[in-house]
Length: 145
Image 1 (cartoon, rainbow, N blue to C red):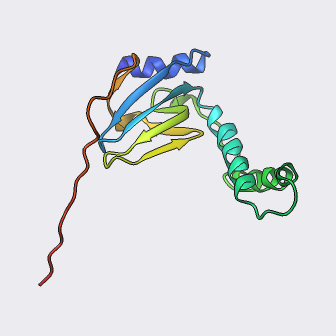
Image 2: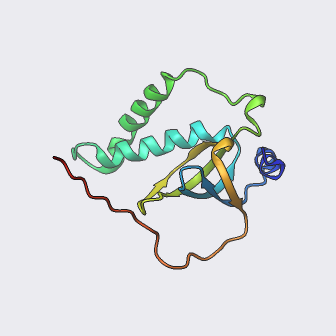
């Protein structure tokens, strides 16, 4: 494991939260702000509430939907039990929030929060770069006989 990347995760636990860019074994590129591991559940809850408010049936004002959305998100996360990050996870996983995933096929996913195993990271950097050219996409042809 890369000792600098492990140090970055440990620094986030102490409140130092820089942006980072990662390339995964899959070829996907991930960017986001490094956050303490414990923020994963809180930010997941907030993202779920936002989603449920936006997708709830339109019955009344938007702000009236929030209590139901909060209850639903709370119930779903409660099913996971009390999941608190263990000390052994520091240096093995990273939490990014917010995060963007640029898939190797060109699609982009924007997320409230992302948790990622450091074993999936093959390249990473802190200093911003510039994307040159267009992302490469692959096409295939299937022939049946």
